[in-house]
Image 1 (cartoon, rainbow, N blue to C red):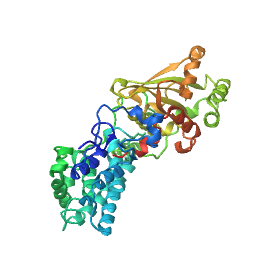
Image 2: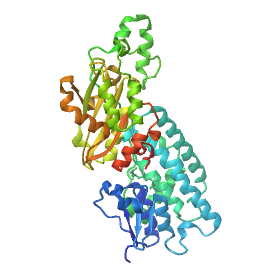
Image 3: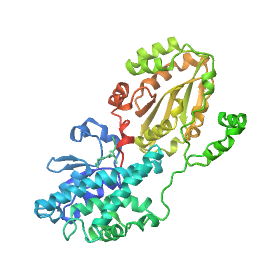
Image 4: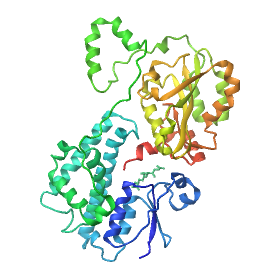
Length: 443
Ligand SMILES: N[C@@H](CCC(=O)N[C@@H](CS)C(=O)NCC(=O)O)C(=O)O
């Protein structure tokens, strides 16, 4: 039988497995060509057919275009008339629908929030990861109860519900659910093993090794700095020493009490960081940069070029952009004192991260060098005598004015990214993947 269509995707995308399994159950052939380049998802031709610019995306030989992995899988599950995958009554169909939605909203999205920071794709925020783990446990409890007396979720045979749920559980069974975790969900374990050993599953997903050592967050190592304000403070205040030591034993640093920044003790500067951020947000970059040079105070602020040190390890451009987001997420205390524009230049498997910063004072302050990811970047100061020579480059970085600019992020707290017009403009100009990747990426 000739393929009825093809699925655009990168190799081994877990979101495609449910479609390929459904296709096998129905004896339908569909292509999932290798050699995919993410860049095509942002071309006008692709966006015309798949306006989200995301994968997987299905293109039928008959012209049907579909995005959303569950819709693609549904189509293949429904392709054969009277397919048993979709139930035989309205009630069964609705129950199947219930579990498909459950797999997306209760499993995939929470599993992504749990796993992706640990894989380094998104910023690690402990409360958000902990909350996601609790939500996954709640969903697993539900499945465990339901599966106590049932082999499959709906009726007595494998349906699309089982395909959706089991494929959502592959990643966590491999890297998150260790033996101790699995021990609490014996019925789900039995169910999962039953499914992944069905020939139609096995042909798509292969052997699934169960997790022995789950992914854990390991903060990047930092070089010790000669004079850290925190340490000085400890020495000056012996009475509080015990309390500080106890706090240091806790896995995650707690926000309070806020140390007063050494930067607040610098002589006042006529350059007002907030005014610059507003200027940048509300005007075209050429207008904003004119204001910047007119108002820049080279004594109170310094300009830095930042280059990621491990560009040769970067792969997908959207992942590089997520790295920038991860760095920013750890610079919470620097918002008052710094502004940065970092961009991803190049293409998948051949890209780099670089940018420019305007920073209070003449050194990289504690608020920046204390961030976990700081050591991954080379910060090079641009001396005032170099301003003229570097002016064009600085402006190009501020406006993302490079042919090879794939994406980027602006470091400034002033407005939420989703409402940041300049960011939207830049995303449009670059057909960028943008901020939403960090929020949307789930599985
Ligand atoms: N809900 C969608 C999610 C698709 C999705 O987020 N795909 C990612 C790759 S796994 C993507 O194409 N991201 C690129 C982008 O956000 O522009 C689905 O299940 O198909």
